[in-house]
Every structure is written in C-alpha cells, then in structure tokens.
Length: 473
Ligand code: BGP
Image (cartoon, rainbow, N blue to C red; front, side, top):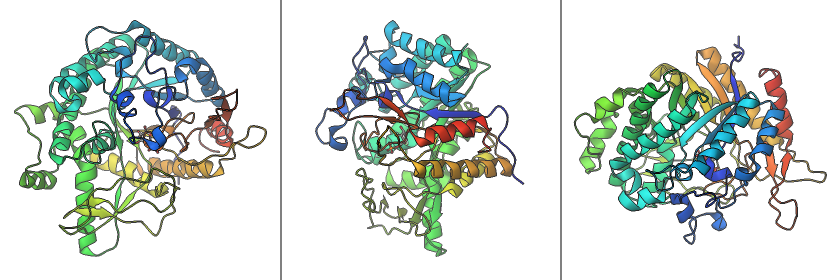
C-alpha cells in the first residue's frame, strides 16, 4: 500500500538567477560568464539571453505573491555570485545582497521556505578571465569565501541549501560539448575541472558545518538513470559503462569521496584522469552531504559503441521532434531512442518509473534523504483568448511523476520535498524562451504593452489543489 507524503513535505518550485532575474548590469552587478557568452554569435538559440529574462529582479514581490496564492511551501532560487561579488571576491556589493535580503524576507513572511542554491552556472567573468574558473585551484578559496559570506548573512533564516547545481551537466556542456562557457571539447580538462569543482563543493560543505550547524546542504545532480537497449551482453556492458561514467562518477564522489575504479582506470589509460593531490580524496570523503538534490527529467537508453563509433553530439534545441542524434563515447556506450517511451518535442523520454529508480538508488546506494530540486516538462505553450493556458500535458507529466515519488516513498525513500521546474516560464539556457516550464506563463509578445505579464496556467490551479490536499489530488 502507498505511503502518503509526509506532513512536513516541501511543496516547491524552482528557478535560477540567470534564467529569471534579468537586470544583468543593474545596481553594481558584475558580469558572469553567461553575460559574455550570450553575446558571441551563434551560441544560444536565436541569440536569446538573460539580460532582462522575466525581470524577476524588478517584479519579485508580484512573483512571491503568486507563489503564496498557489500555496507553495518552498521556493528554490539561486544567488548570482557576481551580483553579490562583482569581481568574484573581495568587496561585496551591498545593493546586490539587498535584493536577496528582500526576496528571503518576502518568502518567510508568506511561510515559504527558501531553498538557496549557491551556484547555478554563473561564474564571475573576472575569475574566468583571471584563472579559468573551475580549472584552477584558486577557485576553491574564492568559492568558499563567497559561500561563507552567504552562510553568515542568511544562515539564521535559510536552512536548506544547494551547493553546486548540476556540476555534471554544466561541465559536460562547458568542456565536452562546447555548448556552455568556456565552450571547449577537451576530456582531460573536463575531468580536471570536475575534480576542482568537487573540492570546492566539499569546502562549501565544511564551512557550512561551522557556520550553519543546524542547516542542511547538498549538491543537485542531473540524474538520468541508464537503461540497456536490449538484453545483449554488449548492451549491458554499455549500460554499465554509462552508469559508471555519467552517474556514479559524481554520486560516488559526493557521497563517499571515491571515484569509480573502472572509470578511473580507463581514464588513466587514456591520460585523461584528473591530478589527485595528497589529501584530496580525504577532503572529499569528509564532506558527505546531508541530502542529494535530484534534478530528474528523463532516462537514457544505451547500446554498444565500437572504438570507431559515434562521439558526443549536441542535443535538440529546436523542439523539432526526432532531431536528437545518437551521442556517445567510442568504445564505451552511445544513446539510442527507447521504443517503450513517449518523448517531449525536445526528444526527452517521459518516464516516471525512471524517477522511482533514481530515488531508490539514492536511498539504497547512498543512504541519503533526497530533495527533488527539479522536475518538469518543457513544451510550447499557447496563450488562448481570455488569458488561459491549457497545459494538460504538463499536469499529466507532473501527476505521473508525483505518483512515482509516492511509490518511492513506499519503497523507503526519505523524500524531503518536490520542487517543480519551474515557477514562472524562464529562459532555457540553450533553447531560448520558446521552451516553457512554468506554472505561470510569461507573455513575451513585444507588440503587447502588457509584455512580460504573468498569466496563471491550468497547471497553476492544479498544483494549488495538489498542495492543498497534501498530494492527494
Ligand atoms: C537543468 C537546469 C535548469 C533548467 C533545466 C531545463 O539542467 O538545472 O537550469 O534549464 O535543466 O533544461 P532546459 O532549459 O535545457 O530544457
């Protein structure tokens, strides 16, 4: 029989600074790597950028009022590092901090628990220029100082913190696929940057233990459980490689301070393993997180890939169904569509059972509570007469994934909460503004004087009922 959602379950929604705030150069904010990257031709979908985004920086009160109306009990947002430290370190920008002061106060006044993400991809450009961001060990101290500033300022009021958001996905895009800044395709530098990011994550957790001893902190991981394409042993091996290289590399390291040994041996063979200095692995092992933040969208299905097979390929950013190529690592694995699963227009497999599997693994293998920090469906939404958006497909997606959560709770998962991605429609890093995720539609019709106005979608009223009924809706 199914167990109910616990009473203190966090019913949330999520965002990230660059995707919602706008005000990219307002009130003394420094530039992030994204502010610079989006200005280079051809980097983003139709040149979209977050200069204005959904103008949350100026419409924060209105947005929080909508959250309260919906009944949210948690809101996950990120702090922009260069908004509070324009040079990445040194002198703090009081005006930038004042924005987060007001946001946190507004949430608490409405009984909404703030879930603060320290890093959602907006590395200060100053640090990227000076030493290459995640590629230099100096970033460990600078990131630690930035985190300590926020722990001291907000630790009394914010108790749930996310350290790094999707280190795995962000750095894969940045150092393998050349689709996030600094847009490289270099596996050695990919593993080197990841190793340093792991150490920075561990530093943040150790500082947190001192400065916010009664709080909880963990990284958010983009978890796509792997499936084998068939029961052929070669596909099982491809699946095993994919788990090792795309999932356990991060999860084992966050949770146990240990790289998967088969993957490490393979990388050493290739001359692509990270440089591990004495004390590094002990520092990682000492910083076990309090929970894993789970960002779940889809599963991936893998098949055998010969040594001269396909390499990594860019994803579908147009929303044209069926345009995602097979992508892989020669000699290890490659992706293949799963004929058992429907997909979104961006070819993302819709698979609630995959969420249950992810939750079971995190429970069994890592013995940690889980906060779902992202889950949702990106689609083309249509604004209809009378300001309505009938996003029945999103309601269906979320309903099925919440049902999977309940099954996982019944399996024994300690699930802390569910933060849907996203609260309002926002900028998608690579897919522009056409790929919408929100409960609240943002009008982007520039010929309409009410541009950027907020419109409640059908899913807004549905999630409102879900929350009011404690997940029984
Ligand atoms: C995650 C990110 C989010 C968000 C989401 C949806 O990887 O943490 O910031 O963008 O994915 O992805 P997309 O916008 O590519 O559809």
